[in-house]
Image 1 (spheres, rainbow, N blue to C red):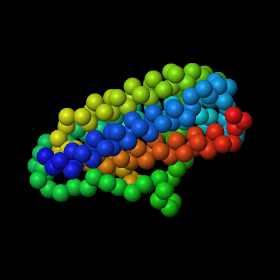
Image 2 (image 1 turned 90 degrees about the vertical axis):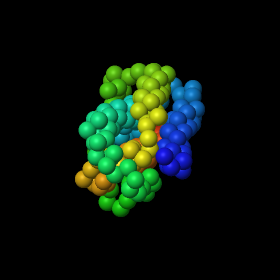
Image 3 (image 1 turned 30 degrees about the horizontal axis):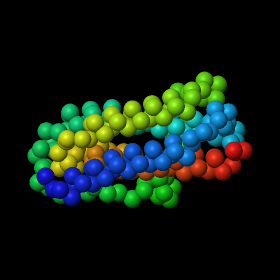
Length: 184
């Protein structure tokens, strides 16, 4: 096992936790009214953005688990071959389709809200499941279990984890923008 590769998986998991903790730190004390206030008619509230992160992380984790079981035998055949662990921020690519979040829409809405603490617990639990999935797995196998996305191309599970962090970052930036625009 390449120690550098092992470190990158751990680094990505630490980034995931740090990003989430910083976000909820910024939201500490936010009223439920502001949590669910939509900044514009066609935009999600902060609460909807937060629950969307839970929904999409849960969905991709299920896909990772299936890919792991089905594709591990192929990964074992490629164990000693090189693979990539980094990827550019796909969400900043020109022409990248950003209006697909409705596929993984929030369970909670301004009409069916939950407190911030519930949203935080839910996302933390989902991230812990992601961490549990990746922890203890040989990164050289993770690097050879690959999935195809029609927009992003081939992603091994390490790169897919990184894309997930970019996705979370995209919504953190959207939430920060909303905080600037709503009456706090």
